[in-house]
Image (cartoon, rainbow, N blue to C red; front, side):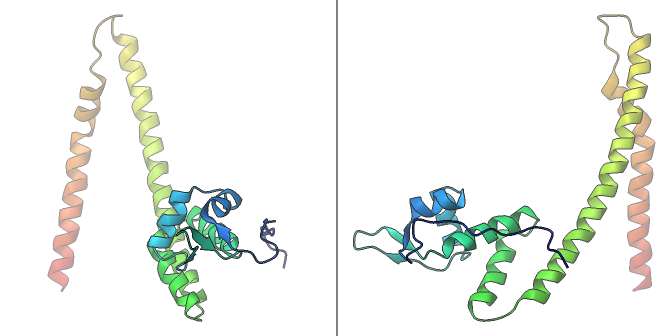
Length: 176
């Protein structure tokens, strides 16, 4: 099976195993120093050593860790979820099933959001068409009352929606 994406190794100035200062790590990973400190506070990055003068010294593999964090955030994992996952991983565990379960839940949520967005898009298109008709009938410089027209045409719809929700809850409560 061919992977969908490839993680390419990042060339660092620390190929000799030398620790990286926060500025170096931030530059190599494409984040700010503040982001590194935030990741450290949230336990996404293990605690780091300090130089004699108090500067943070990150191990060279921290570049890959930050890249992994950024990738996971980009597909919807939260910082809190990653803290739990990385905590398990850093203790020698294998949180792969947990990662898979979280990703599956994110997909279900995303699909519901897409359905909602598609309904919203359809509703907005209808509203714009209605407003265009209303604007066509309104003399130039006069108020057309677009928002008022929207509220008037949707007040019954909103009431029906509220009744369905209330009715649905009542029905569920009676079944308990």
